[in-house]
Structure formats: structure tokens, C-alpha cells
Length: 455
Image 1 (cartoon, rainbow, N blue to C red):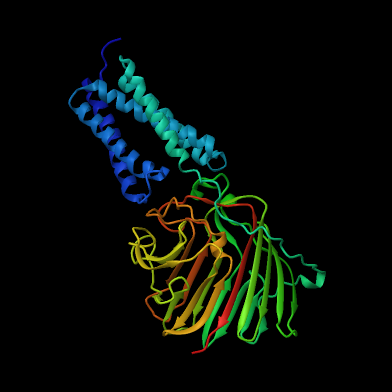
Image 2: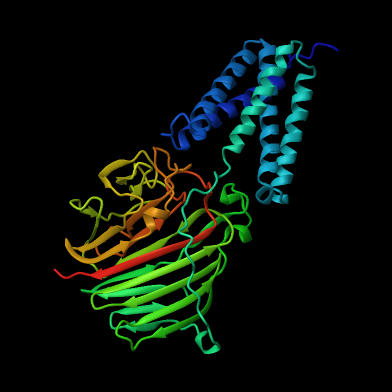
């Protein structure tokens, strides 16, 4: 075969120079955009930091040798990258068939891989002569497969209580879904979605206590690759309600169906409201965004929070931006039973600055006190959040943050604008990426007690 070395063909020098430069730039961008702060034992440390540096260095060596007419090394590098992407595409299709086996992905990926191989064959036209030439492509094939496998969500690490869901006998006259009902003097109940609105001292607290999945994955991959039907949550269906508003402690029981069987009980007391929500999941559910409980505070002058593990610290609620800008504030519980309140660097992305810290055992209840102008208005106790929360590291947050989170932010710069608190047992709303993480099949419970406080 005549010598068709790419370094003697100016066109292919330009093609492969662009190809190698693209890998260098892509590796640097991936290194800069993906979260850091993982321990060496975590796969994301190797994928987000080590592998990206290795790719950038290899691309640089290939480009340097290509321009210095040492074509054999450049050939090995080019072939290695083609093998890298072929292995990555094949592994991804095998691991994530529900997300990727669709025309919108199969056709462009197939065309890309075929074109890469054709360009490689035409541009190089001869196999490498040395036996060691096969080692580097094989290594790159293994690395790419491992990198793709690292994008697969780990097994679920939440801890459902697995207690029995209360049974309701629902008759036909119990199934009218009222838009809104006045449950008690200062309590309104929205049957359609199970939200409860409580007013006290001119401040209104809206609570959505039902476990809700917002962005799901059918095969443990990034949720932005899932089809719309797989990604979106199952519509919540109101099944029926039973109320006893004339009792000494008015009670409402409601049943729903979405990802599983849902049950909600609300009971009012003289200066408190008790809420218990159950969700029964028959199968593991993998999601990017979900909610264990959402809270919205409105009608205040200047809202702030106190968390029971850090009783001496009052934390203001500040506006936050997305995806970058004003930092998000959040709290989390790690595997050492340490409760941290932190502030992100930009948006909801790290590194994170610690504002307060305390101890919270998995068996302890968590209380959040809502203050208005430093005056306590509500105290909300969550009996089951800590015991069910996952403390495994989040694949998107980095910097040693776990999958559980309590995020809080004000809607705007106006001090009186509504404030929001989002609680999750396992999610990836913090950080970079659309990775999914799992909720283990079983029964989840959310027992809450909202106390109405006076100065």
C-alpha cells in the first residue's frame, strides 16, 4: 500500500487538527462545568476530574505530534478517540435503552459514529504497525464505558418507614373534588392537590405535604434524555375525602393516586395543626426533581428561619438565581448526623459556604421556626424527614453534599415577596446536571405538626 500518511496530506492534517482541538476544548469545558469536591473513592472524581485531564493531555499530544509530522503517534490518538466514542455510544444504548432507543438519538448517533470511522479509514488508510497500537484504543474503550456507567443512578438509598397506609372506605358521595374548602377558622384545604393553607398573625403558610415526583427517568439515566411521558409525573387523581368538621378537633382524610397510593390526614387543634401524609411506592422511582414537602410563606414583612439543630442561629431568606448568579441557601443532613446550613457560590452550585451547623440524629425530628421581623409565627416539626432521607453523596452537587436537601429562597428583592422552602429526601436539584437518583419502593410517611406561635 502506498504511504498515505496524514501528515503528508494537508487536508487530513486540518481535519484531524480540528478533531483533536475539539476534544481538548470539550475536556476542559467538562472539567470546568461538572461538580468537584468528590472523594477519590467516588466515580465522579475520576470522570469529572481525572478522565477529563487525561483526555485533554492526550489530545494535546496528538495535536503536537500531528503538526510535527510524527504521524504514528497522531494516528494512535485519533483511532483511540474514535474507539472512545464508539464504545461510549454502544454502552449508553445498552445501559439506557428506554431513554436512548428512540429515532431522535439513534439516527444522529449512528451517523456520527459511521462518519468518524469512515473519516478515520480514509484519512489514515493503513493500520498501525506496532502491536502496542491496539493497547491505547482498548484502554480508551474501557474508560469510555466506565464513564458512561458512572452516569447511571446508584441503587436507591432512602429509608421508607414501610408502615401500613391507612384504609379509607370511600362512598360515591365522598368523591366530589372541591376546589377549595374552609376546613377551620384559619385553615383552608385544597382537595385537588392536597395543599393546606394556614393563616396566623397576618402571615399565610401554604403546605404541600404529599410526596411528588416532577422529573423522572425510566432507566436511571439523565432525565433530559427521557421521553415526555416517562419524564413527567403521573397525574394526581383525587379518589375521595371524609371530613368531620364538627368534632372537637376537626379532621379531614383524603385519598389520592399517582405514582402510588397516597393518603392525607389533617387535624386541627387549639393552637396547632397535625398533618400526616403517606405514599406507597410499588417500585423504585428514579428522578431528578421531586418534593417531600413544599412550603410557601406570604403576607410577611421580613421572613427568616431557625432550624432545631442550630437553635441560636437565625438565617435570613434571600433571593436566588438560576442557573448562576445570586446564591441559593440550603440545609442538609450528612452521613455523620451533622446538619449543615450552607450558601452556594453561584445559583445552586458549589463550593458551599457554611452558615451554621449542628447535630441531628436520624431518629430525631427536625423543627423549622418561621419568623417575621424576628418574631416567631410558625414552628413546623417534621418527625420523619431525617429518618427517611438519603445521606449518600449527590452526583450533581459535589463538595460532599448528600442527595437530601432543604432549599429556601425569596421570590424577589422585595422583602415582602413570597418565600419558598423545598424539601427532598433524595434529589439532584442542587448542582450541575440532570442525573436521576432513586427512592426505594415502600411506604413513605410525612408527619408534621404546625404550631401557631405568639410573641
